[in-house]
Length: 357
Ligand SMILES: *Cc1c(COP(=O)(O)O)cnc(C)c1O
Image (cartoon, rainbow, N blue to C red; front, side):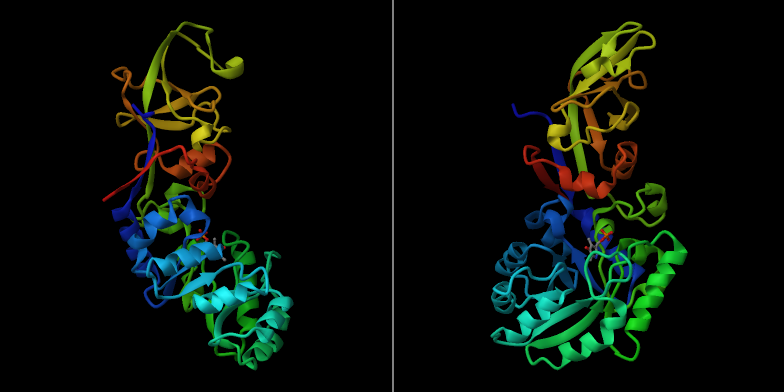
């Protein structure tokens, strides 16, 4: 028998979530963000559930080529652009859209031999200071790019550093609007948080990532509780051992938890070797046969201990949900001091994944 752990990817939830994104921004085109192996869900598994999208955006050119080979004919955007002059040959051959964020890339495109003009996203740095040209350079760079015969459609793009602090968000929005002044161009500005909470910044092409996978860009599930977004990934396992503790017994490595009274605990076959966060402290929520309970002590590589006090009927073989519908991945992430994005991306290859409908 295989270990009882497994992840499921819910195709219906993906369909549902992209429909909700469409309702949130009815006039925008959608780049579905599928970088990092579709946020850990598996690009090859999920892309067909997202074909309502207008395009896919990602960072690895291999993933773009994969989608083309699978028959995807609509746009594909390389969010980090290209890394070497030679990459332009593939961008041309596979008809990819590339972001341009550095001057050397302009020269590289200008000098390339291409079969048709390349569509580009001009990336402007509105505060993140990661990639992009300074806003005040926009007009001149736009004109240079526009004059190049190797360049086709052009779109202005930025990525907001702060969508929570309204003052900082508005400063960046004002900055990109000023940069775009009179260019009469297409704009792509909005990540999930902007799609949900700043409709005035949707513009032409939105870029939803985390909301497609049914988690909250704020890290708090309650912030998207009223949206009907549904969790796509579930991580399940089972209880494989039961221990009856007496007062003072320790649990797990370094006895991080001590029983305060006689207590029945379960051992679940899931640990950080599966992608569960090792930093999840005692009290992180889990669900046993539909009843919420909590982890106890340190998470080890293959196992964790859980409190069976709220679920006295639980026994070996009882189903445990680590995250999914009952336990939101945002709750686990918050408890472990991280974000859902990181947990999704961290699922390890030893966890079997099944599509459900
Ligand atoms: C990852 C990414 C997104 C999606 O962000 P979410 O918060 O997951 O919606 C959008 N735009 C860019 C440039 C990104 O790198």
